[in-house]
Image (cartoon, helix red, strand yellow):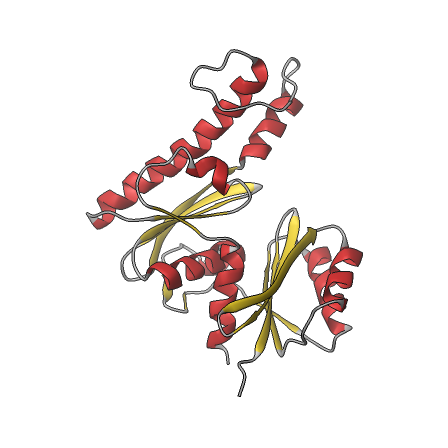
Length: 247
């Protein structure tokens, strides 16, 4: 008997990402602009196989949720929106109010812990960068949220009179404005990761990997030290673990 086909949906601030999975592997994946409900509906109409269950997380608000729900309703498929909680899939929350933790951060930690099976720093680098610490037993110790690289560059352009964003590159000693802006943003992101990593190393008194995902992951990875585990679509990986546990 073949394993069930699962649909996982990550409704983020700028993109809705989806993955069709069977038996721990991906059949198909894709993404569309969060605001483009028609594009998501079209993608869902073209799925190569009919899923038996859909699980998602949503940090993009009610409109994004409605787009997803409408598209899946056309396939006769309800979606279960997963929310953060005190304990799930081997991960427990140390957040002051567990239900207020972003559902995408929670799913990413579950995905990372299922892969590592121990302490790790979970970094998701997108519109925002989240840096979340798990101890050896899968307990979420706490985390950081900061602007993503593109968000930093956009803010500089919007809030200053003389800085205009253009295609810059990372340089040890930037000699033009575009390179200076890009280097500063990358250093801020990588520096935050390294500080959070060192704090976790001290907390668990040992070496821990950095689990890295998101659109800016490759850019940041070049400037990190220690063991870095690059996982594509970490939030979807976590949602898959959650969905498989609901079978």
